[in-house]
Image (cartoon, rainbow, N blue to C red):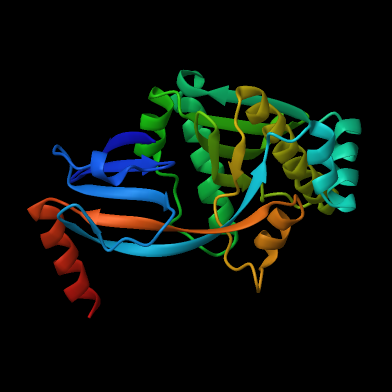
Length: 257
């Protein structure tokens, strides 16, 4: 289990990742608890009531031999990875305290611009949260580079045998279709290299960070499925612990009404 305290302007949140032992997480010094990936639905953690949000995902087993992992991917994915190799797409990986504010700012800039390009403004990375993970050596950021330009970013939270895919963005402000296709291939190539890097770290369970629906997959779901992976369902638990957090939640609920 990994625990992190993240402070925002008004609240301090305890984030729990990977195999939470609920009886050990109740304490003080925070306003909220978020348990990412609880195996069962819980309506209460200790004396606190919780909202449980179900999440479907895919899990890839990185303990498999490299050739077996390669065999899990579709033929199209393998072809595009090999083409990116031939095109000499560059890969850079940053872990923990290697992750500077500049890297996070550049990642956040591309992330925000990508959603704006899609007509979905207002999306930003949770920078405070990522900085806490990085300071605790639990964050990995990987990049794909074409020429001298970074065109894809990925982020992961890791702990011992576990990793979870957190965020991804690609350079969308490209007019040339050939470059757009090259960036799409570079994204697949980066995922493959992420697998190899995390496998070398000792990670055995690679969580694709959620899918919208296993039965009716959307485009992103189908992309993740093209790398193989087994279906899993878990729950993200949100608990308001302090009086201020509970009061704020009630006010927001009334505002929505």
